[in-house]
Length: 169
Image (cartoon, rainbow, N blue to C red; front, top):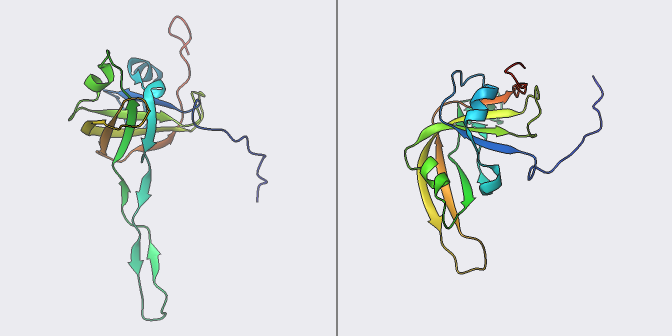
């Protein structure tokens, strides 16, 4: 068995990048560098993240030979997910971009923008709801956008190479 190397642990805040893209030519492989550049980076406006995980619903497989109920992998499902944003008093561009019913892709670069790293997740989404959060606490104004995951996400895709000036990679 291969020996594991020492981990270089990190905190996601300040490293992971979140983008919203309206189109991707090949969603199963994730976006190209040009498609990421054409999208909107949301990272610096996000207050909280919920969901964004693919889960499997196991199927029980009991048999008469034992009192133990084994299971096999069942259907995959991505639970509905959400992003909570800081609200801007004058600019409503995020609210407009993520209006109810809008379809697109949430692309997450889990380990940051490291070309060739297999750490890009692409979730096909539809905005299910967007609502303001109200509180009397001394905290910034926020709004929450809930997303329906509309098809199987592409997980662990390689982050595309950076584009060099002049269009070459």
